[in-house]
Image (cartoon, rainbow, N blue to C red):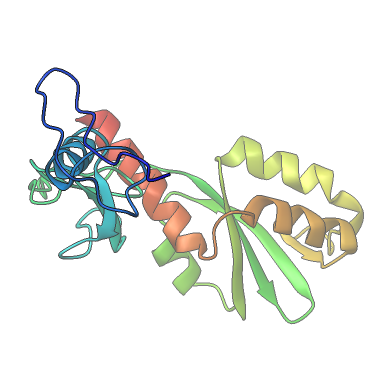
Length: 186
């Protein structure tokens, strides 16, 4: 028995041939109309034509009207107002130098980290002085004297892994926080 493969588009009586591999019983024209509607409604993930000017991300969602950054949802082509000061986003940073870790805080991580000798930036955690103080108390048993440096214990290592989970690059996480703050500012 041969299955009838005629378009079932309701209301317009198409009854055109349905491609053999079509997932639904619609002709090529109606499948194209559905695909076009879906792209307009949901967008299509793709590589941005240029990196996002806010966070530097390279992927986004393409809509018929515009591209949006896949990380911060900044609309591609919108002008970033350079006259406005950047939003203040405080972070707790975790820097490794040899077998120890510095837990500190800053609102200007690039400048701060450039001033501190370290081997590796391990993670950023959103928060200011209060969050930094909490971490210093949490890992007090590993603290080296009265400094902000701590021995890299299993507990501290596990915490850093948990903080960094989901982001391969701490700078990408920071860029997302800054872009979110920009978006909220309007």
